[in-house]
Image (tube, rainbow, N blue to C red; front, side, top):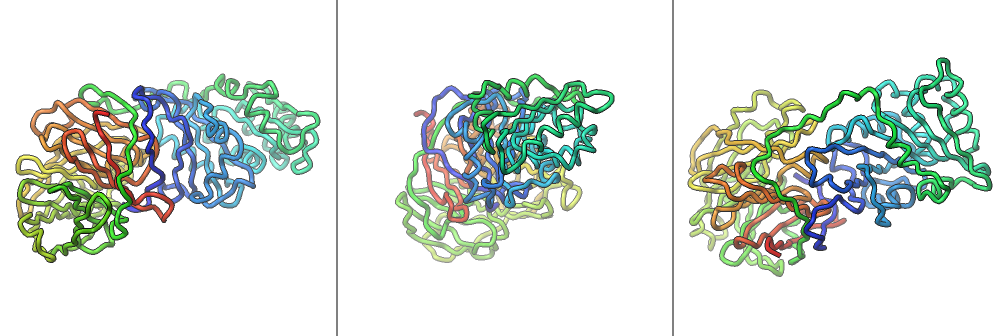
Amino acid sequence: MKHLMLSFCLALISLVSKGQSSNTPVYKGTTSLDMGFYQYLPDGYNTELNKTFPVLIFLHGIDEKGNGTTELSRVEKHGPPKLISQNQDFPFIVISPQNVGGFFSPEQTRNLIKYVKDNYRADLSKIYLTGISAGAMSVWNYLGKYSSDNDVAAVVTIAGNANSLRDEACKFKNIPIWTFHGEDDNIVNVGGSVNIVNAINNCEPKPKVPAKSTVYPNTGHDSWTKTFNKSAGYDIFSWLLKYSNPAYSNWKTKQSSRTSGTRTIVNKGCELVTPLPKALLEISGIEVYNNYFWGHNDSGNRPYIFKFDSAGKIISLHKILNAANYDWEDITQDKDHFYIADIGNNTNSRKDFQIYIINKDDLNNERISASKINFTIPDQKTFPATEQESNFDFESAVFLNDSIYIFSKNRTNPFNGECVSYQIPAKAGTYEAVKKDSIYLGKGNMIQFWVTAAALSPSNKKLALLSSDKLWIFQNFKGSDFFQGDIIQINLSTITQKEAISFADEETIYIGDENFRNINGGNLYVLKLTE
């Protein structure tokens, strides 16, 4: 699957797992949203897996608008994302999107809230909105159109203008609101904040929580810096957290209880080995064999495998005959064969899958004939699958004891965090895959918990599953009951389009990530489990 890569962490962090202490970019084009955003995860998010967290959504001003990819860093100029970039911690999941035009439409804000609810372990009773200037006006416009959704617990607007909504103020009077404005603002008049607060407080019956307006004397348009950094003497973050959305007073988080054995969570970084060869910038599978790397690209590329070394130099390339690269997503091996898994199913509409078998004795040939495993997934009844059932994409495969095991890349909406394993005989023929097991990996941003590659250690005692920013190591399992073992979840700290993984030995793992629009990636990394 293309275009999911963001940036990669090379630093080794402490072994005690904490929250994410910086903004992580999630670029436009990598999610269902029409914008990119920064995400910040609070302390405990990656360790307290049954806990939900309050959410703060920050909408920027017009000067911070951008394309959601190469211009996303503009969002860190003001507000919570700026403070996060300066290492300030927050108790919230903080989502800071970027809009190309500067103003967020009510529909965009609504879709963003829905995305957060579906993809993060959000406390639905504590979703808060804040914005500055054009972002504050965007907050008001959202309230004017969609306050009846009952999704927002409280709001802080800074240097906004809601004069056009004064006649509609009573629609959202019961949402706690605090406005801030500079008395000398010559860009957005102070009345844009004061008038709407007066309109709310004049509603009959009166609002449950009176709206508040703070006007700073001798202050121009930038009334947000001292509000967010608390230098003006106000703590808006503690104020927000006082309020819960009564629409969710009886809400309980729903999560799978299926979490296998013990789960240990650590943070680790990876060391850069080499940039990948240009011919492998869309790498989707890798194996270590005879001290070399063997890799391939994914859909849209020709049916070749490449042999290359640790300096990124291609030693040889081999065309696979009797094969097409519909969507090659992983490669695995036994003593005598490579197995190339053509199993990608991004739209969940594919009805049959292939795994190509090549003999290692033929690796000296430029052109290699392949035999083929054909299989279907009998669990899938509709094509494409419904959004709620879209868990029939696959990007990972391992060989064990005469079988191939594949693991689902979950695309469900709402995202349910489940990974399903299937078993297929490792010999040419036509089969129905057998559902083996399933496990709940976690709920958050979809790309952080879907599985993009897999590998077994040489002893077959460790299974590694990879996502955009995580690595799950399963061990102490019996036979092929991978999910019945213990798990070490390794947080790799930032998100990349990691698509390929292989063990070199029991403690050494190599990871490859795709090049993302020449912004970053296209590299080979090594991770030592014992360091």
